[in-house]
Length: 212
Image (cartoon, rainbow, N blue to C red):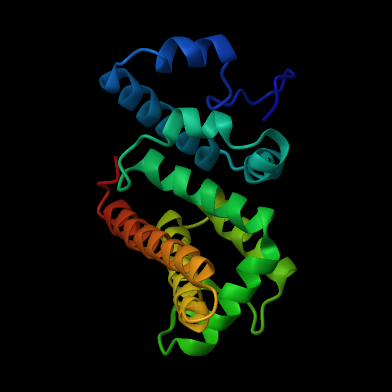
């Protein structure tokens, strides 16, 4: 997904001046229209012809280009919408890629503490190190474009629940000795838990053909 000519013209790459024109104005309706139209166009195009090269470029997009372009398009979308789901998956991927060691620490703590099947649904090996967590989140994102979309969202939701549990338990560990760190972990746990709820809801909407 670069500015060089390619056979597949991806709708998420827009010139900077077009971004400015679309989003600088206070026009929520236009922001919403662009977010939904680009998300649906991208997903429909790729899932209709999921070539390996295109899918891999989409999975590697934030590594190559950062998150700003995606944020401009989708970050203000409702959580339980197609662009909202895509935004959360890319943001989750970026979080894991940026600090895979912390992600692995939280995931392992959550996996050990939880009694649910979330770790199984997410699909990481046990134990899961930083490399395995990066591979897992990339595999989940890849599943959006070439697999069962709802299953990919359910796996992402389960992944978030495991991470949230790990964050909560680590926050408890630090409560009496490092209160600021405990607060940061609690905040992360709440955000991950919210993401889990939203992604699971999006999966249910997709199965009813109601994720707009």
